[in-house]
Image (cartoon, rainbow, N blue to C red; front, side, top):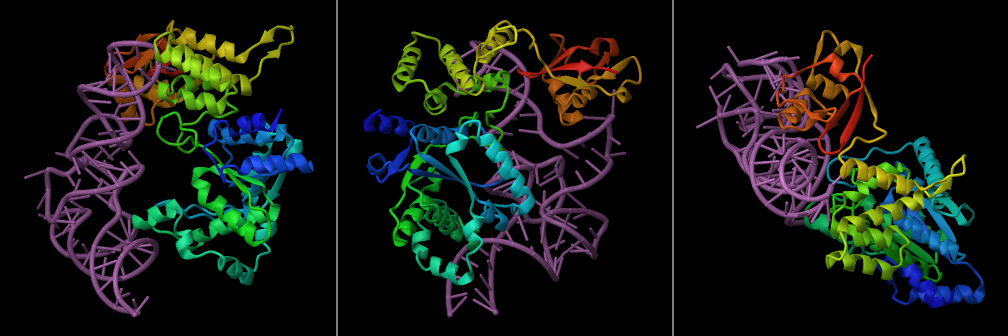
Length: 418
RNA sequence: GGGGAGAUACCCGAGUGGACAAAGGGAGCUGACUGUAAAUCAGCUGCGGAAUGCUUCAGAGGUUCGAAUCCUCUUCUCCCCA
């Protein structure tokens, strides 16, 4: 593979490289010296949540590895220890050393699903930040000006909106910059929200006599809601460890406009083919739904690759999920695997059970009030038959046993009675 | 150090003694339409087997027949001056 092909591969889906031709220069240098580039990615050791959005960055790192480069993951244990109170109202609880350690371990094991463990170096920034004494911190701080720090978009915004900014938050960019110096990074990956931090790393490296790192920006994958970035806390995510069926269902629910991003960032389908697929569906030559099915299958193939079963049949999880989806949504049938909802014996006191009790017990409604609304709005059915729009409805116990409960368009459960 | 403003439900935000479980918007949920897309339309969105019931407007007290609204203290934030 020549350098231009490498560049094309590495630049796929990126949102920018600073400086513009920096990556090419670094790659050329690495080829000449035979020294792998050191690619840095910093992570907060908060609860690990490896989803497709995060996988975008990891997959990019994997590409670097496949080209022979070294990935350095920095776990921000020290910064997490201090606790990050950013965010408008709630102060985030500080993480204990124990939690950080556990989270970090979970992280590393999850990262291995995408990264090549042999070409991944994991470092904790407490290693160097923990040794920093006050004088060194002051020394470090003297290399940045307030005006410079306030250029950072989110600081500027919060300042403008009169939102609180804690003093130590201003130190975060410095800490991150120091990370780059400590590991002598050649490239730092991050979202554009990291622009300032990564560029601070360049400045500091230069001041420390190192060759400044390249900033490689990856776009934030938009979550299932189509508006906010994908994140676990927002609930708009597809986890890479989720089952094929769940992934499939979630991916089919994204809006058409998001398909291109998902194709480019989450699959290996050639850019030319993506253009073709989307052009066809836009022109009405193909159904957008089918393009989306292709998308879902491509993504599932990455995390649930085909395998050969014990009786030497080839199983393609994505195809199974696709068939299942078609069965449920095109044919209106019931899923093969549906979660059991255990109805406690304490609810069954007579011949019948109040429908709302069933819904709350099955976890389909948070409260009886919500359950009543669902019933009234015609959102509940049992064994394919819509429950009467009566919030007081009583259901005979016999009708509940092993019945399929459906709430809304897509939530199913099999009722299990004692 | 001094002065001023503010904290309302998931988010933004109205409300300044009773008609307030609290306007409006966003978000979410349900239904219709569909391709489990988007857009659109309609309804719902504290708890409660439902009551002139219970808990909620930063926290704790107080005034009052009655408080999100008034008073005191506490916590947190923003602005201006130094």
